[in-house]
Image 1 (cartoon, one colour):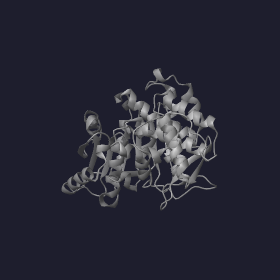
Image 2: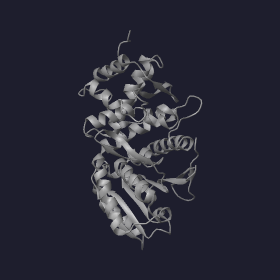
Image 3: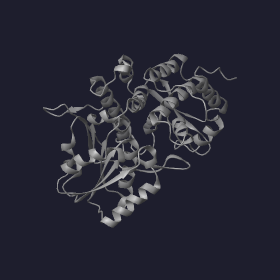
Image 4: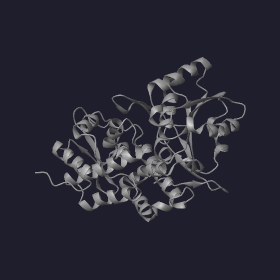
Length: 379
């Protein structure tokens, strides 16, 4: 696993992402001073894509960028920002301002803002530099690292996108103070996911936390953030473009544990459910599916329910019909032709791909999610 490098004399940790386009992820507090160096001296203009709720914080970053001309684009909050229409408005403005290949995009916001800004950087002039300043736990451990960018369409989530690695990432934990409690908890779903697929210590730490006392300044929370980022770094360095892992490991697909159903639930809800909540449901679902397929026992399924539920994340639901959800899962990015593929576990930190499970088991696992309890074995 990637070793963190503490920055001398500070409470910062620098995690290096290797590969063809290496960059650093800095974790700590009050990190804005690093932004000019990550943007680079060549940039005359910076396009700052910012969640409209965070515009006052954008002013601080504008000041620290000094003499550079900064174009601030305030975008809608949440998934509403991730549309071709919003991207097109920014593309048109960049063209009018003469935004060049040497200029840089900076994102300030949660996962949706990060995805959108990354997609704009990936597509403008076939790719310009981007620096991410994630402000939510979800964005820090997921969207900002790894170079996946996307927008949503009516057909589903993240179906239009590109791989485009950032020039740097500043995970300033101070921004977590801007979050409502439920938003912080939502981000924990992605952290816990990383524990199940790669780092059992994350699960132990999460199980030791008192959910009601979870605070931004808690050193355990910081360790969870750093561990989750390290998991993602290790995965994307080994398989940046999701072409597959080695020795049966799913490669980058492993980061989509729980996301096949999770993305379907988000889409069918009109993105009114938080991403982390959908991932929690998706992880419980796929754990139950793995049990029905004979890959894991009921104890590991129950650990999913207990650990996600410990923080108030949903582990059961009712509402959308299975047939409606199945239709959306069929356009999941992991699907191959008509065959559905799921990342499952053979044990904690032993992920694998399950291709073409029976519809009976798919339906039974969904029924269990609606019932909030284990499904009976299928004949």
